[in-house]
Image 1: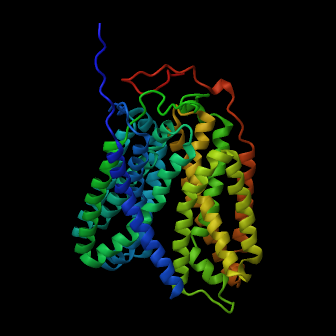
Image 2 (image 1 turned 30 degrees about the vertical axis):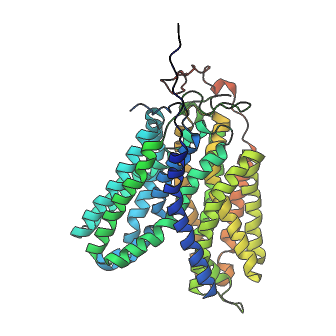
Length: 44
Length: 444
């Protein structure tokens, strides 16, 4: 009796990178705007 | 809807971005002020009227988190995120209809009521799932998600402002901005709906790391009957009230403190100070919450409440003598404010287990609603009273700060009273989960 061949788990790394970019890019934009605003205001 | 069980090989690092896609979206609520001036001029509203959608939204957040938490726990995170997506996005679409037709009540109903339900369900949707995936680092995991709620306003504030610049600030421009917000957030949140999974068994059981369902488990119904729940309720309420004490009047406060000095604070610098406070709030959510995994939940709340009281004391005694001291103390207090929100799910997990931690968290968020009323009430009433008594500058806030110190000490004592839950509240041993069914317990 043979055991059925088990399929290896799919590589999730591309999906993980995409998911983190999906949330990281807008958050990066928000942080950039914050830093820009703070430096601009304290300089001005 | 059955909770989506992770297939073999599913990475637990896919769950935080799923949670963030929801929290970064619903965090837009704190950027509502961008819409206030255009609405006031386009629909001839007062400042109080234009704040209504936000206020109703926060009330609905607390109510839907408290009353919807059991459904979230029962139906799983994908159901909850779907409800949050539908409510939050359709709230914007209803508001767009209201702006286009000049019917302000539709904006209040859409953004405040319908969108507010999305806020509450969305806020609690990933908490329980994250704790189950990261039993070794629950503070960090929930900190990432809840940091997103703080970060949402950082994204939405400039984005919404630019959109209004492009579309115009008349009713048509506002309606178009609401429409774009609704559609964009629907797409953005969809990632969370698609990605979120519950662990196959005890989730991320790793060698040498305790599983999510190890240790005592307490149901939500039983948890609210324990003194630990109410001690934590007081801890959260006091910590949030103290943070709101600064947040509520940050800009006028720093202006008043240094009004009579050689270096008065301009309006634009005060606005920069408010932006810095937002950053401290967000950083505290991930930083302090992650630190709690190392130093323990009770200890980190000792820091929030004890050092927080000390910071208030420093501001009250020496705040008007040094601008850097004032700013540093305020930033630390705001980081504790954010940290308090982000650490509480892990504290609940430590005390009550993961069985119904999401439902218990939802009930605990009523402390937030209470603090949302209490904090501004104390600060504004006291400042008005002091002003009427002829005081000015930093003297306007002395009494408020003394009250805040008192509240933080009450919270500190409540934290000291938190002890492990008595075994009579625990539920019977768990039923082992299999590949087709997420981990669950038999009812008590």
